[in-house]
Amino acid sequence: MPAVKPSSRSRKPGTKRRNPGTKRAAIPPAPRGGPESAAALEGVRSVCLALPDTTEKIAWGAPTFRVRERLFVMFVDNHHGDGRLAIWVNAAPGAQDAFVANDPERYFIPPYVGPSGWLGVRLDRGLSPSEVAARVRAAHAATLAAILAKKGARTAKPRARRG
Image (tube, rainbow, N blue to C red; front, side, top):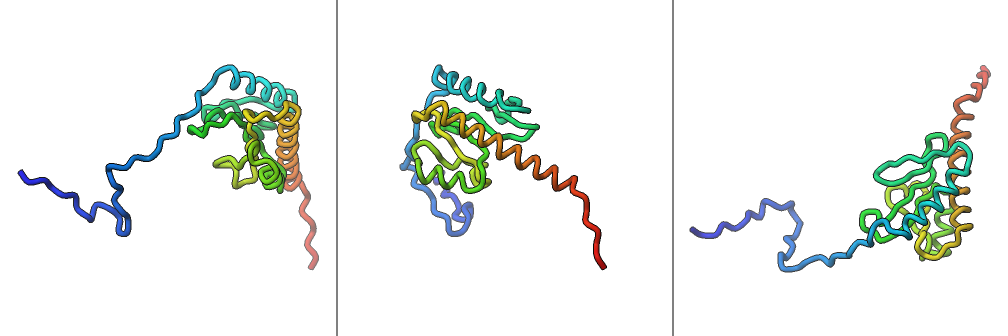
């Protein structure tokens, strides 16, 4: 029986067929968990839960910290194999650009929330606990300010129209 060739119509026009002999380089994922991860999580947890109106909730398989039900910190360990032990924090406008530009080894733009101005903070790059705590407190303050601003906008009395 003769071999059947795949139809060229099975691919979208303009796409090339990948050479089956080539393989993409696999990046081995960093190990999950372990003492370094547990210690980092405990440090972040202690700072977050010391702040007013803060709760912890597991979401998307990771510990998250919320102020009045709004997310302000997410702890990530090797998120989708990126090899990072980090937190993603809500940041004030302009903070993300400043931190990433000044220290790209320790700060990064996280996936998903990065376009909204969130900041990635590497916990595996030697940042002091006080620096990590400062980023967490700033995230809490930025999130709480947004909550209060939104609440203020809803409770503001409408102005009387002038004819």
